[in-house]
Image (cartoon, one colour):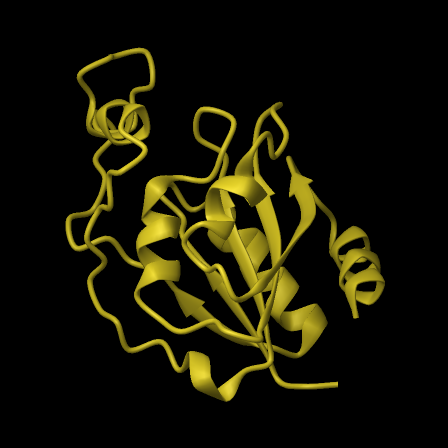
Length: 157
């Protein structure tokens, strides 16, 4: 079994909490994907068609800038990649992250946070950004206990 990294994007802190529990349960390192420009509450207002997140998600070619590109991807065999579900898929900043590194030959297991929707077309939309990686649909968490997360981590090992 190789070395694991939990990489995540969290706009409001919800995904961060789950990522921290997963990293602990998996004995994995943790890396936060930070946008170059943080998202404000107004940016995340999905009911406003002109909000930043709405504009980004309506343009499948949108690639929000990330703050840095120093994630030590080369040192890991498996990446557990987390994000909130936006408009039934991963936010386009996840595409930015995947396109910033070489994931060839790596396994990427997805997890997400959502109040109610599932992964939708997420795997297909992310595979374009990491064509030589194996991307696996993992689990969507609404709320989770340490026990539930530990069981899920064990199931993907």
